[in-house]
Figure 1 (cartoon, rainbow, N blue to C red):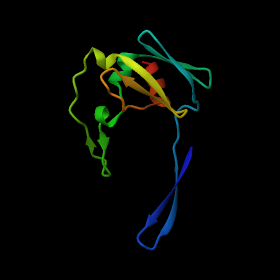
Figure 2: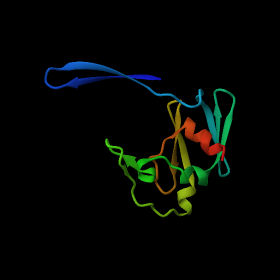
Figure 3: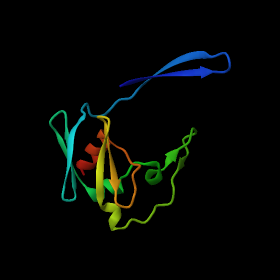
Figure 4: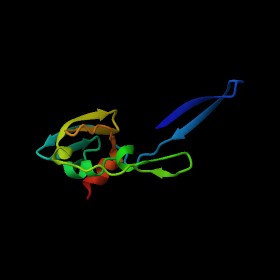
Length: 126
């Protein structure tokens, strides 16, 4: 995937075209997904699938509130871990994010994690 950005520098309005290339580890898209008991089932365009327990999915949430975030200098800022209750592991809904990720909505109102295809495959393999 190539994304083009146009940046306006100074007041001279000089335009710089920057191309960033993002490489996915896996060359596939999310075809569909479903929930069965306490498992998230994901089918990919290449015919493979991922089966991920809710608990593992919630414990590995990639959002900045759970995993932290880095500043421009590479310093990691990670908030204190919030205690999880049983509702933290109750999945209410799963929303697609394009063809490249899924966004689970949890019963404890945690809704900010977007799980990429790479992360879904990684979580399924454990």
